[in-house]
Image (cartoon, rainbow, N blue to C red; front, side, top):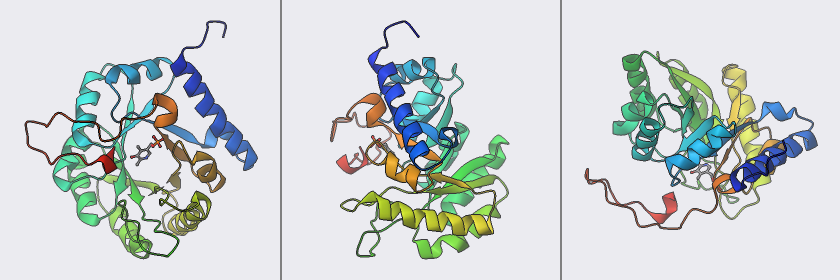
Length: 252
Ligand SMILES: *Cc1c(COP(=O)(O)O)cnc(C)c1O
């Protein structure tokens, strides 16, 4: 390409190169790692810019923001993903956007998604989110199922009529090296594949730790900051008219 690259194009190229380098270092095909652009807090126009550069998969972590952006960008062939904690009563709205849900950590939520899939006539792709805990073995409480509950949860979710179990998702615990945590995730993913061969995907790795995740076998990395820039911490949000609870800085 001869045209000078825009900042967005440069950031996208840099992230793609990080992914490719990490894959090669792990002896993996760079094409075996998908890039999910996490566009939470960024306006629809920033998503448009990346779509024009060839990025197709985008992730959001708030149901309201997802449905608004999906409607604004309905003219584009975007594959939406939902990566935030999801309340059961918002499952149908998320499913109607066609989003793949990465944060399924309990059966009632999976059941609600399956029901929504039956209504739209389109099975909902789901990842089971697992809590990788901390170094001391306690659960990190950033969402996610207890690893001990995973086999039973996977069996129950796989048996639902209108979800498609795709694999596992996790966020590295804070205050710990990501490598060992992602190694625990890899072991859980292998166990899941033994029971459910179709659930072979691993959603792990963000701007700060995608190399470690790819080394441990991630097939999809979820990248926000490195593509869009830093999100404002605790940004003042317009309170939705529906009276949803205020957003905590933790969720940003
Ligand atoms: C925000 C978010 C990301 C992206 O994080 P960055 O550090 O900005 O790349 C990935 N996964 C989840 C679940 C997120 O909420």
